[in-house]
Image (cartoon, rainbow, N blue to C red; front, side, top):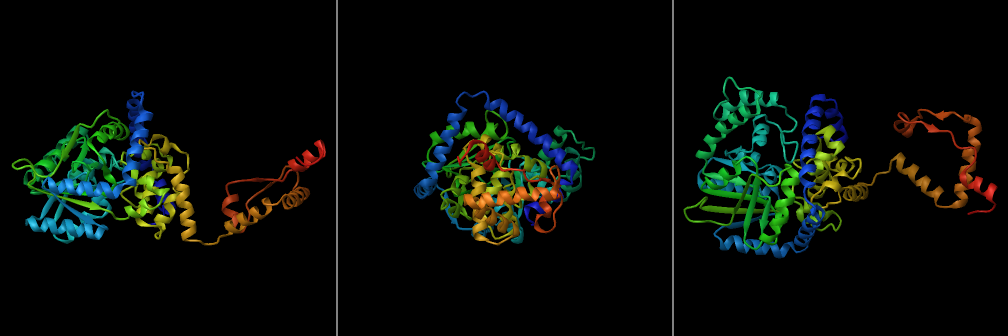
Length: 473
């Protein structure tokens, strides 16, 4: 994966992508603003959500142990995974133990993070995505580019062609007369997936929330595919990031108001599924939870950076970000794109790769992401914090560093500043009153290529003040 600037440069040349993104994000922004505006206590809900998440993260060890005990008591089994390799090995072994060679999946960003599908494929196990957008991405051999709408970079005509070309290779084929009408596309997906739902014996899920007190997992979704995955198979394996915990059922009341409004622009999700352990004769009879670390404890150790773990994956920050809207999600090199990806990925993965080193700079620092975040993550502050970290971990002197060092030396002493200002005023005689400095050679070329530096003033403010008012002030 190239660094962000290189990837963004390529995507900026794709006018169709920019059109797709602008149309989708503006629609979602409008819906969100409307339903958020209905609540007089939105600011208080936001503060409550942030406070609950911060409290949980500060006591995460306690709540994780409480959650494990509750799941075990309810008949489930908890597995602990330190990294992606361990999580993939656990899930693969669990599927193999059932004797099955396919799984259906729902709400699985964590599994995309660890590349579970690829690990299962190496073991001869087929993994079928059942969310409509995830299905589009999988059939198109593509990668997700948005948290809420993974196929946001595709338009209806492209989706029709993907369905007609690929569905028949892996299951029920799309109708020959398929059009790009949304209802027809949804019908084709429903017929294709229904066969897999009715046949699958094993399901893999993620979770939006995990309730520590009761060992309950929660999935919210809009299509009903989650309900099918969570109830029909005989074995259910849920891969859950350790940051998804909330202490109690009462806390869900806050997040089930914050999440749908911030993500889909709805007052509530059409489907909210909860499950705790195993119930004889009802739903999966074997239940496993894989609690995933994969860099999260490293982020937790950063007193500034840990607030990124409050994220509830609503995608509101993506929909208001001017950088994301123009470059799309693939430029971030992760399943977590946009502003939250720019601060979460370097903490989960470190800053060794070119892409992770560049992500904290993939922002204009306009602050729109913080304004819409339902759990008040100060993403602009985190971006600056991570930029400092990148510099400290990969210190490399550049011409700009030398220039800034010289500026610091000058500005740090009044006498030096006065002397330099006098020299600048004297240089005016060489350049003329109205002249500007054009393109300069060397390290300043990129800066002056698109900017003009005006000629220095005839007299500095400090000199003028001293001359007209007398004395230094």
